[in-house]
Image (cartoon, rainbow, N blue to C red; front, side, top):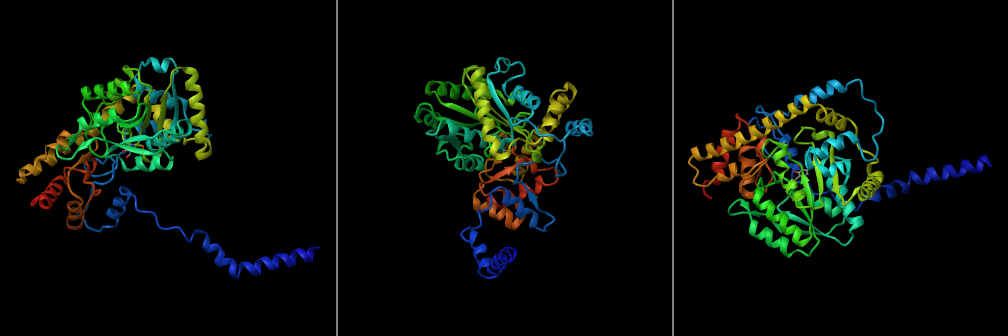
Length: 425
Ligand SMILES: Cc1ncc(COP(=O)(O)O)c(C=O)c1O
């Protein structure tokens, strides 16, 4: 018996040292390299450039005036309090209850009746991306015939997220290339012309990549038209606090929809406004008709999360609940958000003034009219290529400049380079 088993084993090993090796490598022969991510690819190229003058205004991550990444003081203090007291247990599938509670207050209001009435189904998510993806999967599962209307342009990953969730995509007008502002008339037409009960993706504030937001009055009109058409608004709020410096003010669009009685969905991220990029902490919420529905929806969101990642990471959530549940730390956070937003606003003014001082014949008013982390400069892909090849300035080819990467030290150099490549335009 033993010698028979040994003979079989010898047979297997003889075969795998022959054509077995070839058959192993054939598993993935049809896999082609994926196209580079348009945003993360810029950072790779920047890192590979040895030039001492290089500037990265590609990635949407805040830098201080020395171009260095920032850890907020409120986060440092929360970590000091947490250290040694944190266990490494799993969080529940829906994440940290305390963090989710505090996060809902930011979007729905500190004293929101909707929170008190427990009408919001909410789970901790893997930052804003994870929140959007969870919602897209939920939409596909419970509204399998629906589509999603996405603004033109939008953060490129929105397309990937709803594509991978297999939700068909439609687009709606948003940006007006000539005015470099909002194409409000076409936007309203698209809302009116969409079939009743359509799903729309809206950026709550600091639209990425354009930096163009509707005014309060325009939001009211949008909300009214959504009511008429019975559309569903899904708010992606990745920059709360980065538009005006005040998280409460930046939630205005959502509050208008709530006042009008919409049942919304919302993705929140702490990547930018708490500088917790790598901690991957955010929240997905879905406002329901009553508590019973909210319990059901939450249980389904958890069920979607379970086979994907089981439960979310705990450290970032603990940092956030520590900050937001302590009035002093929360105040410190609010001050620090304002400092970040104000520095960006200052750099907008500096870039525009530098371009005007250089005698540029073009209008650069949109730099200060747009808000949030990005300036949608209007530079063509060819002009962007020249900025990169001749001046070592890195940005996405759609002309989006991350104002968070602009500093007192590089703003003059950046303005000069932009002036050079746009001179003959
Ligand atoms: C509009 C928008 N939504 C969502 C995100 C998601 O970011 P994160 O997953 O890092 O929270 C981003 C990040 O750039 C964004 O710009």
